[in-house]
Length: 138
Image (cartoon, helix red, strand yellow):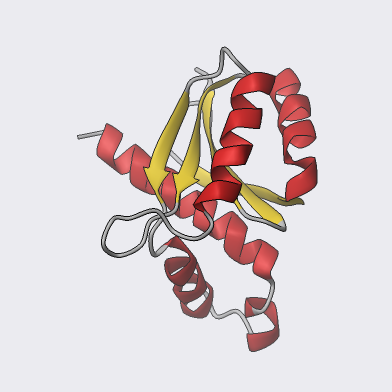
């Protein structure tokens, strides 16, 4: 069965997570510079079967678009052009960075390790993917 991939796109870095082939487990894959994200995905899609991609949709607490929305929308348009046949699902990414940071604390990472913003982005993508899988199963 093909995988599901999640993207936490940011201005500088992009966190990427992926499921196992049975679509049961969400795992962090990597963090890449955002300007190389499409090239990374093209290479990954050539090597692995992916059935859909989740991209975070940043919202404020009141549900309105956040200040990073234009950056992510521009990436979404480039993604659709580069991969027109790949199904794309937008998912709410509110609180994922805070949850990722708390996960790092709970995992016993040192203060220096918790300053790794790339790891936070990768964990954020993993949280989005895990939440999507939990909703899909019910």
